[in-house]
Amino acid sequence: MSGLLDQLFVYHPAPWPSPLMDRDWARASGLPLQEVWFDSTEGARLFGWYVESRETRAVLLWCHGNAGNIIHRLENLGELYRLGLSVFIFDYRGYGRSNGTPSEEGLYADALAAYTYVTETRRMAPQRLVLFGRSLGASVAGAVASQKPAAGLILESPFLSVEAVVRHYYGGLPLHWLLGARFNLADRLKQVSIPVLVVHGDRDEVIPIELGRQVFAAAKEPKSFYPVSGAGHNDLYLVGGRAYFQRLKQFVETVVR
Image (cartoon, rainbow, N blue to C red; front, side, top):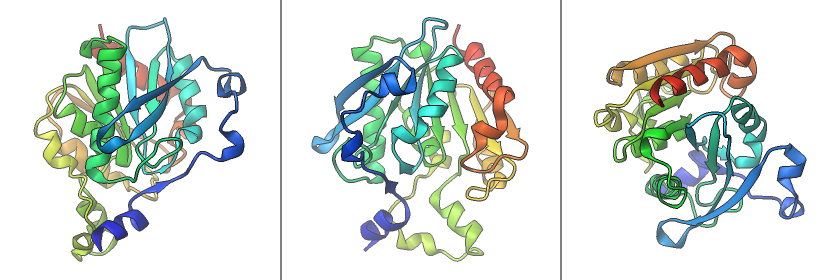
C-alpha cells in the first residue's frame, strides 16, 4: 500500500510528449544541449542534457524536484549556463524519456549514476563538481554528497524529511507512516562535510521556509543561508532574479578554485 501511495502523493513525473520527442531542443532553446543516455540500476535507462561552458571550471550536477521533467527546467538551465556554469541535468527513472518507475532508492541510484557519468565518462574531478538539489531533489543531492566527494552542495527549497513535511501540514499526526518514502536529509547531512548553501523563498507555499531553516540548522559548517524575498516554491529563480544567480555563482566560485 505504501508503494502505491508514494506513486500518488510523492512522485509526479511528466512523460516526454511524443510530438516533442524528435524536437531539436538545442535550436529551440538556443543552448548547446548535448543529449546524454546513461544506465542506472534495475535496467533503468536515463536521459539528460549536458551543457558545457568554458567560462568556469565548475560543473553543476542538478537533481530536480518531484514533478515534471527536464523540459520544464530549460529556462532555468539557460540562466545557469549564461552565468558561466556547465550543467548536467537528468531525469530520474519514470520521468521524461527515462524508463522505469520512481522510488526513493531508485532516485538515489539514478543520481549516483549521473555522478558517475560526470566524473568517469566526462572525467570531471570531484573538486570541480557542485551538487545542486531542488525540493525533493535536495534530499537526493544530499544522499550523493554523503557518499561521494564534491566541492559543494546547494540545497534549494529543501526539507529535512517527508515526516517533517507531513507533521507541518497535519499538526503532528504521524501520517507519514502511510508512505514508504522517507527522504531523510537530516541523516544524510550528518555525513556531509563540504560547504553547504541553503536557498529558500520566504513565501514558499509548498515547503515553508521554516523547513528550510531546519535543514540549515542540521547542516555542518561551513554553511550559509540565502532567503529570497517574495519567492514561492516554483518561482524562486524568477523572483530572485540577478541577485539570486549571482549568489549561486559566488558560492560556486568560492568552493571551486
